[in-house]
Length: 207
Image 1: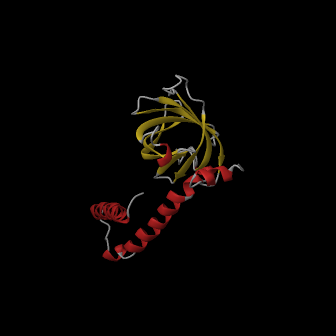
Image 2: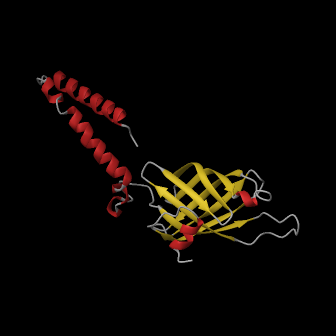
Image 3: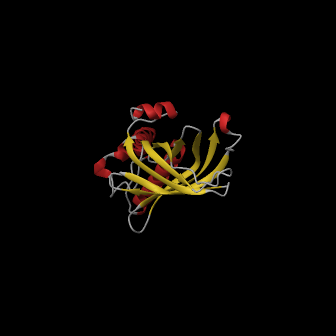
């Protein structure tokens, strides 16, 4: 979100340009017009903060003023990996997980939680494709629980997801890692709450 210093600079620049334009037109400009400057900046900062945190989610604003899907909440997730067990040569079964998305208009954070690990995005973004579909992309770090690190090392990866529905009903896409593995992610059945760990995530869904 824009900082107060930057907002002040923008408003001051606009005011100076406005004042000079009036002077060139022969209008008498008084310095007293600048007295409410700090109040204007303060009110605009409050409005911008409210917009960044809450107002951008208002359904009426979506599509024409706000081109950003509301994804915040906890999503039931299925992870399908191409990783094969070295001992058996068999591909592992789909893994049940939960994707926790925390979002404001200016920020986006995704955290994937499973029974054995936690993956958090180091950087993420949302783009709107020419076909009108939103896509989420990012780079993440996976941290397995200490008890399983003998067979599952910490690693990094990237993902690209497609948002389906308006409002969003499903999120699907793929991921790949620096362990030369890849797979698919399917998100559905969103809850409004934000889980903090696997226990609270399961509790949201009555497990």
